Length: 423
Ligand SMILES: Cc1ncc(COP(=O)(O)O)c(C=O)c1O
Image 1 (cartoon, rainbow, N blue to C red):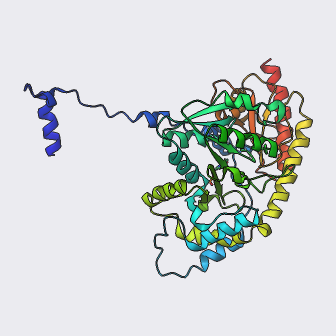
Image 2: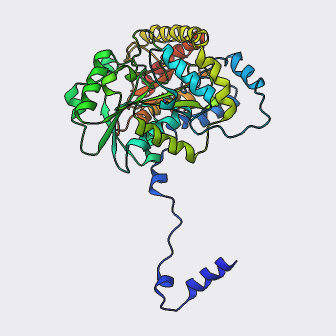
Image 3: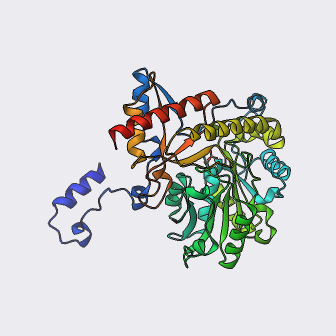
């Protein structure tokens, strides 16, 4: 009330007080907030929902939410939680989760002490912590496009600029030459961020590609941030951790998560790990500010981290079958550009259309084959460079093999019809 009176007086006052005559600041939201993009993947989701209400079956090839059941061990661990209070966990993680992450890494040939890790709210928080730990406002991080769209959002939160090095569908989105990457490094560059196996392309970087990155980060004194949340999903090639390169122990930062490999996306358990003590101590300070990660979920995923294979082996086999089904199915669609993704559960394909967003919208809004249609993710949202990926879409393999085959058949028929009406 006092406040209101003050402003009424201020706005009608004829006093020459410099404070009162200063125009009131607008209530505009921040530049950072305006930069924050809404998830491009959800753009067409509302149309899909409306279509479903009309009785059309929609195959979702657009999102990366695994469709397989979570291990019973997770629910059992929650039932067995016997503390009287759900208290804050330590900011770096509960001892059982830290020791489980250590065991999990060891199992994968990676050595980290518990003091070299902070448990995070998913891989997402690990990435934000890493960006904030190595960059000041307006510093730059090199990424390879197409890249996981939320890197944009994380960079906006951290006030960091992403500088995108373009990759090409022609070589399955593998890395370009050392010189091409080097041309994107400038005095503001602080790090290179990679994701292998990759979302959205399924590409796994070879040892030679990783060695090139190791050379570059050493030469230009950069950090190497490595998002390895799809580690197990490796079909054609070995997925090699950056933590295996001892010569960059001080500059490698590993970002990881239980979400995908254990089908526990909603549990929100990830980790940031590095031999660089300053990085981990900084991440711990960020961790202290947000107090802790969910206590129960940390306890719940620990059994899986301690003994991952029993759960991951069958689901990786299932995704391998799905990858093969998609790869074979794509061969029968004329005009589509594609490659064999070595890992993860995604592929970016080129369609014989001018604008994949227009096609995806038409597909979900207007098309049906036997009262069924498909929801796709236009790939432009995975690029930072305007107009790149304009004829590409990402497919996620979150359906069983028969449904993937059916979806591809629908896309094939839809393309034939679309091309006739949009020559
Ligand atoms: C490449 C990549 N990194 C990180 C994440 C973040 O996952 P979460 O925060 O659930 O661990 C995802 C989720 O889709 C992803 O695809």
